[in-house]
Each structure stands twice: as C-alpha cells, then as structure tokens.
Length: 254
Length: 254
DNA sequence: GCACAAACGATCAATAATAATCACATAGAT
DNA sequence: ATCTATGTGATTATTATTGATCGTTTGTGC
Image (cartoon, rainbow over all chains, first blue to last red; front, top):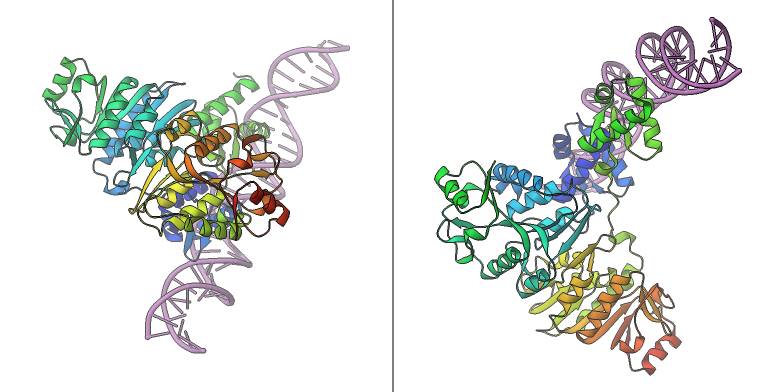
C-alpha cells in the first residue's frame, strides 16, 4: 500500500515517462480507484506538476526523451537490472562515474538516482534524462554529435570532452564480447568513444548480459585484457567465465 | 531503551534508508507506541527532516520534486516567437548554427525543425529535445556540467567543446542588455560560455525582447560592439535602437 | 446539431489514521 | 520523602482518505 505522497510521485513519474496517461492506466499503475486518481490529478495540476485532460493527464515536462525502444521491448531487462544493481554497489561516495550509452547502463542511471554525492558524466541522452532532476548528483555530459539510433553522443567532440576528465569508474556496455576478438560494437564512432572511455578510467567495468557472448561486431573496441571488472548474468557458460578469471578480470555473476 | 533524540535520529535514518515508513513500522523499529511515533513525526516534520503522510512518513528526498518549466509561464512568449521567426530567416542552407540556452533560443529550435541541411550545436537540453528527432538536421551538443535551473550545459568542458568548432551564426540570448554595461547574465559560468560562443562565430546574433533593455546582471558577457546583429520586438525605444545602429549593429525589429 | 458513451464532479458511507485527553511512571528538585 | 515536570501509552473523539454511486458535463461520430 502506497502513501498519498508516494502515489502522486508515481503518477508524475509515469506521466514523465510516457508523456501521457489515462485515468484508467494511472488507476492500475497506482492500485487505487479512479476517483482517487482524479483527486490526485486535480491536486497535482494545482501544483503545476501536470496538465489534466479529458480521460487522463499529460506531462508538462518540456524535456522528455523517449527511448528508441521501450523497456518492455528490451530483451533481458531483468538480467540488466540485476547487473545494474550490482554495478552501483561498486560506487563509493565522492566517486566520479562515467556512464556509457546502452540499455544496461541506462538501468544503472535509474539506480543512481538513490545515491548522493557523486559525479556522473555520460554520453547518453537517456541516462541524462534519468539524472537531470537529481540535484544531489552533479551531472555532466560529453559533447558530440547525436546519433539518433542510440541517442548517444559520439565523435571527435566526445573524445575531446572526455580528454578533460578522469573518472574512478567507467561503466561500459558492449554489443559483442568474444574471447579472441574482444569487445566490439557496430559503429566506428562509438567504438572510438568507448576506447577513449577506457583510457580515462581508473577502473573499467564491462556490463554484459549473456546474449552478448560470442558476438563479434564490425568495430573492435578493445581486448578483454583491458577490462578490470566484468558483471554478467548467470546465463554465461562457466568455461567462458573461467577464461576471464585466468587473465585477471574480476568477474561477478548476478 | 532509547532517549528521545536517539529515537528521532533512528526514525530519520529509517526513512532515508527505506524512503518511507508507516507509523506501525516505525513503532516497531523504535520500540515505542504509535502515539509517540506520531508525536516524533510531528516534531521532525517541523524541523523539515521528513514529510508526514496519512499512515506514516516519507523522506524528503523521495518526494522532492518541483514544478517544471512550461511555455505558459514564459513572459513575452509571442514576442519571442516573432523574434525566432525572424532569426531563422537569416539561416542559409548548409550553415552551421550555434544555439545558446534560453527561452528565446528555444523558440528558434522549434522553428528550425522545418529547415533541412543545416548543422546545429547547442548547450541547451531544451533545444536538444526539440531537435533530437529531426533526421535532416545534424545535432551536436557541447559537453559540460548540467545547470539544473536553466537546463543548460556550462563550464570548462563546454568551452573546451566549443573550441573545436566554428559556426556561421551564433544565436545568443541574454538577461541584461544595456548601452553602457553591454550584455550581462546572472551566472558566471554561463557568461564565460557565452563569451566563447561569440568568439567562435562568424556572425553573432543577439536576441532580446524589450524587457531586457536597461537590465544589468551580475556578470558581464561582452560589450554591445561585439554584436553583429540584434533582433528585438518593437517594444524597444527608438533612441535605444538608434544607438545600436550608430555603432554598426544591424538591428531588426519584429 | 444530435445522440451516445465516456468521463467528470459532487456526495456519501465506511474505514483508517490522527489529535486530544487522561492517567501513570519516572527523574530531578526541594 | 514529596512534589513537579516531562515523557509515555491507552482511550476516545475527531478528522482524513478512499471507493462507490449518481446526476451532469464533455467529447465524438454520424
């Protein structure tokens, strides 16, 4: 059972995420009757946190980035959430964190909301979107050209920006992870960006669900030896994990 | 048995950890009756250490959201739209455009959607938000630290990013515009960013509605002589305009 | 412009939570 | 030792929140 304040917050968040929501949807989302939802909407409108419409309400958040694909379409979402949960455990107060673009790192951004006193730098609009309202986190973004497909900034300006900073932990995502071919990604610009990320981080943490194993994409980012930590879901074969451990990578399965 | 202050501290800690707590839970947690918990909650709320709700309390952090910016609160919106409309007329195919953060430049971003084959670079999330879905526009962003108040990126990283590019037109917004004191803005970091913007643009276009005239803010950005073009609404006094023309600024009234 | 369905606001009863009250216990002062 | 001030828990009266109902309004398709 939610308190009134929690419920209202949830409504606002729902609207910010989906831009709109019907009374019915919100009723389901919050588990209260439609009457109560209407009462909440009325009050929230007075607080200028949303705009009521017939049938529901819309967000009046002027900045609202939508993912190219929604959470629901995200394969292995639960695995990614578990990976993200483990990843944030590595963070210590005062750390400077670098967040790569990707669906797994996006889950990290969501978890980060609950942490205070850290600095986050990212090249992902989606991560930025999650963190932009957190006053307790100093959020920076790399410059760069927007790649519409991934909603990430890439290119020479990105690398140039990254050159200015050094971070305690870089959380990297990847498309392909192979013992021989290392880490790879389909886009050349993104590969270069990731390489730079590896270069400026004290600890490099690679996040990958088991579907990435054995995949090799067009552009090589780095060898697996350049990784310090690997967090994977437990769908990974033991032989694969063993190999990583042999070369000194700290592997965590979740 | 706990002293009162210990108990209160424990309540606050519990809430920060779990972000919520019912009176019942807190009663168990502290080992006192619900009456006492309520008394404590009342006092702690007065000390602004938590937020009470029916049934318990929530941590302030979990409920701390504020009304986002909206067009309707934007004063002189129509003037700004007219200014923006005029501004985009200056743009030619193939141009590289720099968009400052601000409500007027945001209107330009909205107009830009209809133009093809240009490059846009901005330090404003809001502008980025408008342009992110335009596949016919190459959108770049400067790096930098996010300033939550203005949703703009500022700081050394921003200037560093801007250093990498040269643009045909920079559209600048300002808080203050005064004949003697020039262009000024309340925030020091933003002032530095604007200065850099002026430095990397072939043409500098200043956008200002008449409410900015005579205003002087904390940080000086530049003298009015550094401006090439000025677009204002017709609420500006003729003497003011005349002075600009005398020093060679191309003034357009809309 | 009319009819229809959906959504809305006002109202009410049920329930749960709160505030007010009182009695008691404890600690410190006299 | 007694008195008083304070904090606490139990009890009770009051209030807040909620879901349901129903007449009214609004939007939509024809």
